[in-house]
Amino acid sequence: MRSGFVTLVGRPNVGKSTLVNSICGKKISIVSDKPQTTRRQVRGVLTRPDSQIVFVDTPGLHKPVSALGDRVNAAALESISDVDVACLVLDATMPFGSGDKWVAERLDLSKTIVVVNKTDVASKKQVVNHLIASSGLDALAYFPVSAKSGHGVAELVAHILERMPEGPMYYPDDVVSDLPEADFVAELVREQLLAATHDELPYSIATVVTEWEWPRIRCEIIVERESQKGMVIGKGGAVLKMVGTAVRQQLPPGVFIELHVKVDKDWQRKPDRVQRLGY
Image (tube, rainbow, N blue to C red; front, side):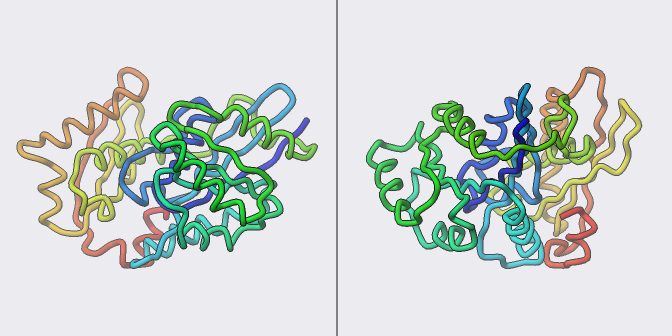
């Protein structure tokens, strides 16, 4: 039996969550085109007859400007220690820059694989330029992949498996994520809100399930200002209705979701509130 832990790190929006979902064959983390969508570590478990790999999805590393930013950065950096392999995920459509180098400097490159993602939308020249630019890191291996289309993902997983030590199963073979159900539903709500709201709102939105009496679920949506409350609700409740419908479609039949919006002024700048919300 081979088993071990693999962390995925990188700048915001490089496709770490999409890659974990692709590898595990199931939605583990929410995805969005908004930066800092992932706010906490989420583990996806890939189990095969003779192996188990635990993939740790992490928030994008960035320059923080709030208590929330500090916390999500810390969550990503904490994931780097005590893993068997680290995957430095790069966005092939963006130049290899100082932000990528900053992340790389925090990794043990003797156990790091460079993953150049988004090859489905990048040109061949962009992919090659990324591979050349990152070759100076002297990492273990380099893999161009597309998390969205799946191209190159199987080869990446096969290589990671070869680097796993002998070990036990850390999770039962039917477990694909360690995220509690209530937290997963709250994340689904936030994912749909990210898709529906304006650019300035994503950082101000938090979601938390406050009641769970199956099939009834009550989820609070927290914003920072009274003006944002109306934007989240929408005219005649249109946004909330759309969000609730989209979330129910991803859950078992018969579930009933209550969505409530409340204002917690400047919550993301208050460390105690950030911690209370589970970040």
